[in-house]
Amino acid sequence: MGILVMVDLWNGIFGLVAAVFGGVVTGLFMRSQQKAEFRQRANEAVRALLVELEENRSVILDMQRRSSAVVLDGSIPARLKRLVWDAQLPLIAGFLDDAALSAVIKAYRSSDCFRGLIPNPDATYEVDANLNNGIIAMSELFPQAIIAVRRAASLPVRPKDLSDSLT
Image (cartoon, rainbow, N blue to C red; front, side, top):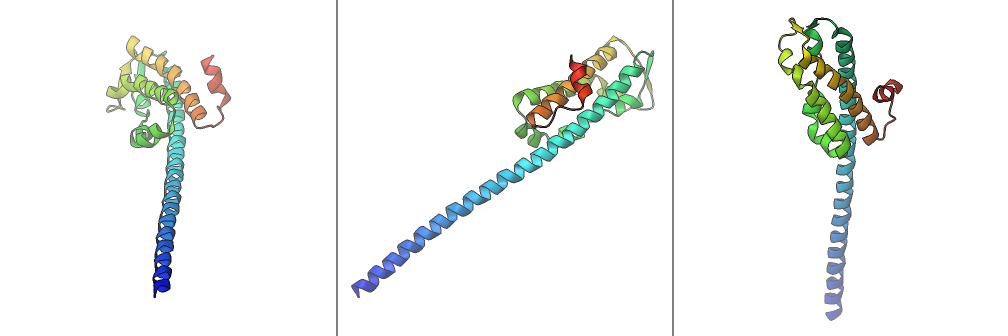
């Protein structure tokens, strides 16, 4: 009877060790899957942010071409977007390094001078010194943000004309 008790004891200990080991391995696997999923979602959010930054850069270039006029068509600043930035901020902030995050924040803050214009896309606005300075700041900061995000995401810093606009 003593041997049967020892065998049962060893089977119980072995079963407990196997269960703990299996739980640890399963937990580690699930944790790595969660990290991979976060990384994929953050990468997708950063790519969407790049599309938004590039589109805003195009709008800013359009504004620059037209800012020599006395008035600015209100539909142009209305095309400035920040939907991806606002919606995906937690993912983007967790993915980008501090320098890239700071560059994007500065770029979007530079567009704040146009926030009041967006509700009236059919109106025209006089290009005063404040708006002109805002256009100049955006034309410098958005390309810098694009390059910083591309570097942080380990993407090639393209298109070539972005690098040229910084020199």
